[in-house]
Length: 184
Image (cartoon, rainbow, N blue to C red):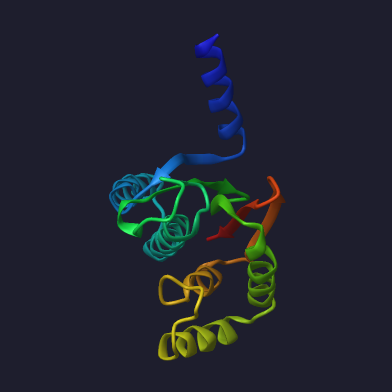
């Protein structure tokens, strides 16, 4: 039974074009290790350098979003961020001869509207508008809700060759599952 369940899971992800899948707690060392495996896989896939850089940049931004913002964490109570483990899922694959990077994690339901508005705005922007916004954000003050420079989603949208896709699923009274997909 165990072998069949795992083989069926493997078959499902392969049928969806997924070449790399990670689900679990994410830390900076995990990000680094997965990043090394990803670079090697992209090299073996003979991806060109620009594609490799864009996939890697999107991968890093999405993983850092999990590390900084996933509501599914250990320990569950607030502590210093250094000792927390945050849970998420990441997939990298091929669809219609393009690479994609998807990432998902639980968030507070109170953040859904703000994230949806921000991502919808990014979907409507041209490459030049995204570039200008990116520069503006780097020069300006960090947003109150940001644990970084506040440019992660902008960077993902800039590097994606298609409009980024995202969605939310209510999980319980306090949480939603957030998913983001970018193509390169």
